[in-house]
Image (cartoon, rainbow, N blue to C red; front, top):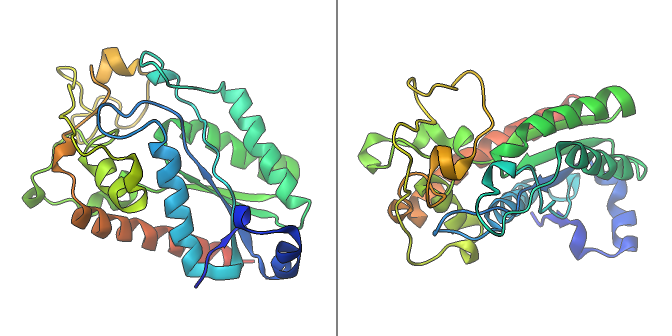
Length: 254
């Protein structure tokens, strides 16, 4: 099916198909460093590319909105070029977008998130929308948290996967290859930094990182040199199926 992409439409076209729309997807990303491997637009481009693929599975039932290109990236501010919003600014921005859509009759919103740093604020947003505005709102990641089960020891990937690592880079090769540099470097991970697995100190909680000081001197985790398109396609498919299942559940429960 052809995805229904808002920025490609004119208003009479949208008006005609509006009765068929069950919900809107709002991709959310960030403008932040991704080490020497992918560009500042990585999280936004991944979220938008992923959202368009979801749109192809639903056609006119799901409206794919333009992406939000800024997020909560204060932990990356030690790297020049990163732009962050304050939490209250971000919450107000996403709330306003959803409320505006609701005025056109679209009262179910799914935020598809390409940046982990946004998660806390997204949780606040969906509660504000539900309990203060009567809008059904949801959010989901699109990356490692969804396809981690597909990563096997035989792949030889690093233990510290995540930001600007082979896992994120492989998915970017599929969703937005234009952000990926041909020559990539291994992450210069700070000794003792563990973000995944049973030994991760904040596995069941969280902390406010200074990414350059606490996590990686060059901004990247893992080893993006190991990323390839084949793994990206397979892992991205796992994530797509999970998000498709979630959206179908939302539509069918109305």
